[in-house]
Length: 223
Image 1 (tube, rainbow, N blue to C red):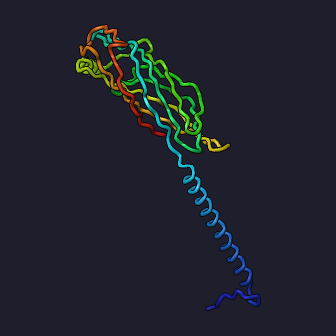
Image 2: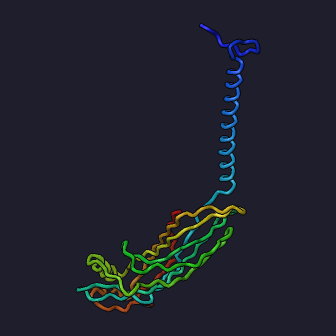
Image 3: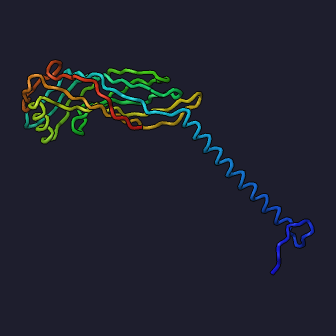
């Protein structure tokens, strides 16, 4: 069996083969070192920046109008004004809000059309407050079980409305700006019904003074 020689006096080109093997090892070592360095830099940046999702709060929800037609063809008409606050708790990360919509939902059914918020930037530890009007476009047809559930909720004296925020955000670190990330926010709003009377089958005209929002609530945020 022949033994490969890597010395300068080896015959048959063995020295060249050994040089090529050393070169390949050096290249592989350099690639591994660069990968480890890149991972280390990413870890250090993450530890320094500690990025956090923005925090959202529902400060108020005013029901200006909520009408329900008779049960033969149950339609809902509503106009609301929601006051939503967002805070950026990051020390070194800014947030751009792009194409962000707000709408109201009742038991998984949209009861208002989306209202677009103005595009804006939120610096470190900044807070933004929006107060969009939310209204149904003409009317919203409620499935019969949902209409019954709404009547039962009003009779019980409590109605739970979800204020949804849906859009896109970008992160800013120094001069670097990231791509878009999908922002999903759910703010539950528990409304009390003042007189506790159900309105199923009636044009309630329920609005300010009929539904009351009592307490600001934190929102669930997913980015």
